[in-house]
Every structure is written in structure tokens, then in C-alpha cells.
Length: 537
Image 1 (tube, rainbow, N blue to C red):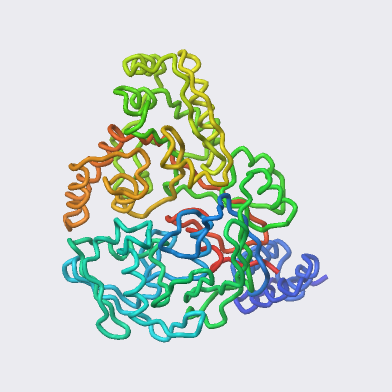
Image 2: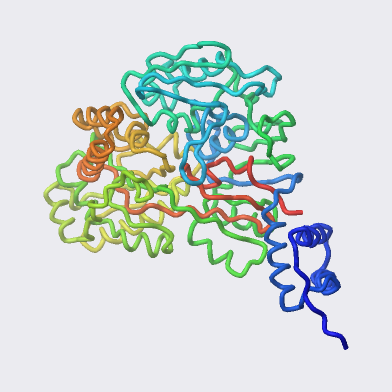
């Protein structure tokens, strides 16, 4: 028998194999094709692997996706300025666009803006893309951008980023495609700030946000707050690629196990923010994969400084020593976390202060501090909910540690529905769940400034506020770093927010869902997954 000698396998031949895979050819048929072309059987496997990977990485258009988040309420909104839950962010990313966005590496990319430039970090010029259409057919112009940004300055709007937007002293139209922004003080982070979900661009004069009229990749077909939304592909989308899905439906399944079971039964193709306890349910399931990212998300225990018992000297410090951070990391979060020390700027951020070491778990020291605060013998509630990731399990860890020293905490578990409007920011001791933010300034402005809209522990410091303004404006990187390090130390020592760990977000997905990547703005690809993912045929 004459020996078969391998030929030189070319990229053109790779394309032939890829085409055969797309047609549904079996492995046996593919190997026959390779051998007929003179490829040795030993090399055939690697050719098939390479071709298979190429097919998997090539976007496929079509199909409908059902995805489930973990939080929802009747206050769900399509108004980007008022967005506060993950469900809001997902929908805003689908229906609108920002001037800029952050890629998976955390780098600022242009979106509706063609360019953003400045000479002094104080006066900025924004040049807009031309020919971008809103869903109602009108063309994007500077008027839309000016209107969208100025809304955040109107107290009546109730924008969640009002304190950040106040930096913009002047927002004016130069011409139809140019906007000038003058800040109250220099801020080199402006392009990054404009990538936040709240700074989506809406049509000039919009008062009714129920239709989600934006320039985004999807058009809103229906929206029921607290129930679901249905979106269909925007045929006039300005980007050369995407979206790939014909439609997607988004809703919340607040019960973690129910969310996972919906994925396992193929009722949905994406189950967002899966509790680490549920990973056992996913083990050995060939039709399911996980997407793990650690970008600075955390669940924190908030103790209000202006209410009992947080206003008692020594109580908060005692709580910080009663938190068993290692137990939370290993047992509650199943190792899918990095231990933290009550600073909101995670190790993923270049301004993270690495000198702040986690407080030692010291129940006896905690007891002495509780005695100083005069709270021993009291029955103290800790409000927790499935709405705040793993908070009930964390609360139980605290409760058990307290019981060992005679401190009586009881876990007040409340339903996810209404948690964010009725308990978060209000209860004396409660949990929050903070999504990643790209800069320390944004974190501090939202959570720790004296006028911060989400000041979870009511921390107020004139010194902190002035340092925040100084860091924001300096172009001296070393000075800025030094300020941010000191501010993190102030928060860790003086605020009533306890951040035991930075949580790795786990999104569970169907093995047919492709294109999902990590993003510094959070899970589900920074909540913008719908534009970039596709379903394998």
C-alpha cells in the first residue's frame, strides 16, 4: 500500500473545515475529509480543535435569549438617570448608548462620541458621531447630549449621579455635532465618568421613558416594571457589528436556586450572579458554564453612625473585629472572593491602598468594645436579604460569633422585593451590595462624600470632602495616589461600612451562549452583554 504523505494544510482548507462544521458535519465525516485531503490522522485532531474554536469564536446572528437577573422591583426604570438596580443597568445598556464605554481591559473607548479632548482637564470638547439614529428616527445631535447631561443637575429629576454631575458647571452646544463641557475644577477622569450607566444619552426633551427611546442596539417592545422587558434588534444600529441576537427577554428571578434551576431546565440561557452555594448544582452539567469575574463588587455590612447602636463609641470597631473575614471568604463565598479591609477601592484598581491589612478576627476584643459601648445584653437586629448577595449567610456568621461572647444579634431576613427601597440606607444595621466603579472618585462621590446619594453609614467629613476635590483635580499622579490612599484609610477606620471581601461575580450561562467577557463595570459584561453575545446554532 502506498503511504499517504501529509500535504501542507492551509488557512483556506481551515475555512473549508469550519464551513463543514457549520453545516453540521459529524466528527467522522470531518476526519474522512481531512484524510482525503492528505492530512495525517494524528494531525487531524488539532485541525478539528482549531476549526472548532474558530467557529465558536465567530458571532452568529439570530436567535432569542432569555436572561434572568437577581433583583427587581416595581420601581424598575428605563430612565438612565434614576437607574439603581442591575435590571435597570441591563435595560439601559440595551436601549441607549453612552458617549464613552470601558472595554474589558478598563480602557476608555469612544461610543457616541467620536472624540473627547482637553488641554487643561477643565474645558472639554466632545465631537459626536454623525448619522446616528434614535429608535424614533431622529438623528443624534448636540441638543440631545446637552439635554441628557443637564438632567443630572436638575434636583427634581432625582439623578443618582447628581453629586458627580455637579462638576459640570457649563454644558453647551457649539454646533450640531459638538458639545463643550466646562468643569468647576479640573478632572482628568471625565471620559471615564461619562462611561457610567447613568450617563446614557436620551432624546432632547424626553419626559416619558417607558419606551426606552435611545440609539442603542435594541428597541423596547414591552416593559413591565418589576416583571420583565422584551427587546428586539435595532435594524438601524450605527455600529458595524452587532447586536447578534434577534431579541432578548430580561427579568429577575430573585430566588437563587430557582434562577439556577431555570437555567438547568433551559428556560433561560443566562442566570446572573449565582450564589457560590449553587455551584454544586452546576457541577458535571455539560450544558452549563460559568463566567467568573472579580472587579470590585462587594456586599457590605452598613452601620449607621447617626442611629443606635452605631452612634455608641466602640460599637462599630467592635463589629469590625467580630467579622470573621476568612470564614466569609472560604465558607460563605466558597473561595470566590478576595479578603478586604473595609475599603471600597479593590485590588483591581491602580489606586488601591495595599497597606491596609484586614482587621484581625478577635471576639474578645470585640466584647470589650461592646461593653464600652454599653450594648451587651441587648438584642440587636441585622437586616439581610437575598437581594444583597450572600448577606443572609454573612449575617449568620456574625450572629454565631456574637453568640460565643454573649452578644445577641438576630438576623431579620426580609424579602428581596422592596429591600432596596424600604431597608437599604434606612435600617440601623443592614447590608448593601455595591457594583464595581472604575475610579475612586466615583466610589467616594456616590458612597462617602457628605452629600453622597448612597451614603450607607451616613459618614460625613469635611476633610474627606476637600481631599476628594483635590484628588479629582490634580494631574500629579503621585499626589493623587497619596490622597486616595489616605481617603481609603479614613473610610476603613471611621466609616460604618464593613467590607469583608471583594466578591467574584459568577454568571451561569448555557454552553450555547458565546461572547461573554469580563468587564470592570461588573458582571454580565458590565451589564451590556445583550449587545455582544450570540447563541450558537
